[in-house]
Image (cartoon, rainbow, N blue to C red; front, top):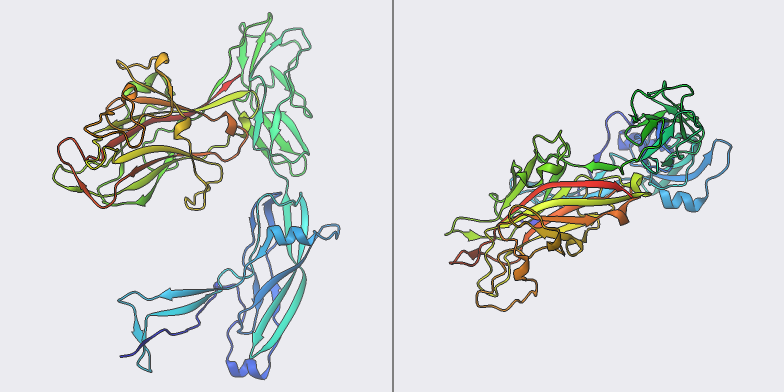
Length: 516
């Protein structure tokens, strides 16, 4: 039987969006028409400078698959958005051609006796949808789109231009961060004291401040955000510490964003010394693989289905630093060790921590990430004495859920680490970098990696590592990830004190901001 590829055109239409789309060839041929009836639902929930994707339009293409083009974009006053802006940030989706490969159980034989193992499908599900990229220059306001719709039938081209067919309202950008520097400030009874004005991030400039609580004690300048004590108020203690909720309200739409724990105001009759603030930016419990608990696992090379990140009760090594609410703190364990007689295979996986917005700590704060690790049962390769596995740390400023699309930078060598000694961490023992896995022994080999160091033996000991995130403060999307991977090819089998991939623990990852 002859095998061949069939070119079959399958149009996949979004149900409910196309009116009278399919008609017979004879009807179309006798009365070909230009496309008509293009209609978009107005979009009113977009934000200035942000990503936007419209709903699919409805239209009548008389059975043909149309193409779309954005001809012009105008603001509410009729001013035309520059063409280079439209070409850079604006896209209208058209159909795509996909090759579908039929699996072994799904192939079929056509009437000519040909075996069909793949076909071409035309995917038109999202055609006509309009999308705008992030960081576009569209300010708050209403915009109207002129769209050209084209169809082709038997080499005849039909086109219709629809003016002002899509209406887009870009709402004002709302505040994403608010910072008072310093984070603790003293207001004295009977004085005309004011706090500093806060720094506000991300907001359209037409806004006002309001107090969300403690209005009997404090007042706020609606224009500047400066706080002062209500005249005649007497503190209930010396000092009385108040942490008010600050509301930032759009004067355009009256939408409100609330910020808590952004300042501690010390109300007193006499000046007081104010301690520096320490903010727990992120301290996940890691109870399960879920962003609710702070992390997700991405597997690059499974190797063996028995290799996975498990969690168990966290040890007391970092207990004094944990927040009180983290009573269910867990640690992660990935076990690359197989039974002593079994072959070990290559593996690579990443533990990706939740992305963090550090824009609020750009001024007046030092930011650090701290975590605890332990390597166990790592025994070097019998071929050259190197470690069969490694634990590394990476950072990204553009990870949005797509691992492959993000840029990852290794920062393992930028860590400051300390290996426990007698169950504690001695400050004098800190060193730059991260300990090489295993016990640092030579076992008859030189050190081909140049990484073994007998003074940094972290085998079966906790290592505390700190990464300085201050250069990333001010960024709105910072993601840290930990990579565990094997270094050998093929398979290895444990033999005496060699060829054992080991086990890695990760505990109490957290990010703190320290007021300068």
